[in-house]
Amino acid sequence: MAAPQDGVPPRPRRRLVALVGPTAAGKTELALRTAQRVGVRVEVVSLDSRQLYIGLDVGTGKPTAPERARLPHHLLDRIAPAETFTAGRYRRELEELLPALWGRGVVPLLVGGAGFYLRAAAEGFIAVPDDPVRLREVRHGLVALATDELRARLSSADPASAARIHPNDRYRLQRALEILELTGQPASRWNAQFRPHPVHGAQLCVVHLSPPRAVLHERIAERAARWLTGGWYEEVQARLGEGFAPDCPGLRMLGYREVVEWV
RNA sequence: GGCGGCAUAGCCAAGUGGCAAGGCGACGGUUUGCAAAACCGUUAUCCCCAGUUCGAAUCUGGGUGCCGCCU
Image (cartoon, rainbow, N blue to C red; front, side):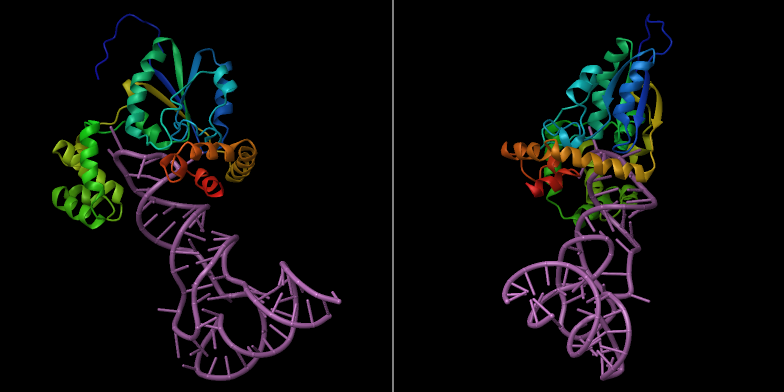
């Protein structure tokens, strides 16, 4: 990932600030307020795996239209409730998005609670080629297998990974096998060669918000109540009405699962 | 007041004489493309008292509490 440096002298190249913390910690609020005070232009880049869903707004606490009007937000509303996003894809999207922001002189502010996505930004992942068609083929073959079988295959093909992954952790067993099949190299080999690095070598500053647990619980309860009277139920009803299965990834998220049952 | 039913973990809930299922939650851990996820682990003197029995959440008696019906 070479980055030819041309003109553009200003010092704070590629700065990236992350504001992370649990639900209801007050991140959005803080982001909006600080954005107005600091002397630089700030735009929010969502660091939230749930707000990626189109049409699931209320229960994900997605920034409202007025909030978005005050401050531009990125990486919201990318997939349908039936789809799944991944941390790897998040990294790629950041790679595409960030240069445009920096180019306009804005400091991107990553806001959200998805720890794994923060890691995607700060460290990245091994560069396994992911041609969607092949990936689908490979997966198709693997999901059909019993966990025992996955385990057996992995321990003979990639013992190092097999030793590291819990025997019941079907998902990771499968992924390790997937990497092997996709690349011909064991996952353990890829991991050994991997060097973590922030997106585009950005200078990343992470701010953690961690209010006391009691305060958090109270706020979460208060917020859930507000959402329920604020159209959450109707939102779920609408999505189901559009034909999304009650057990599709978007509707299986914490909170949504319960509302779906209620509907 | 009378009759009947129920009382098991924070919540839901199996279990009718032999060391108290399970689910959700909570808490702790792990984590290299699901991450508010997944996986692993922890989480109960079975409402109280007395009795029967080698042994009781389970049987008996008496309390207490809740629910329903009746006067």
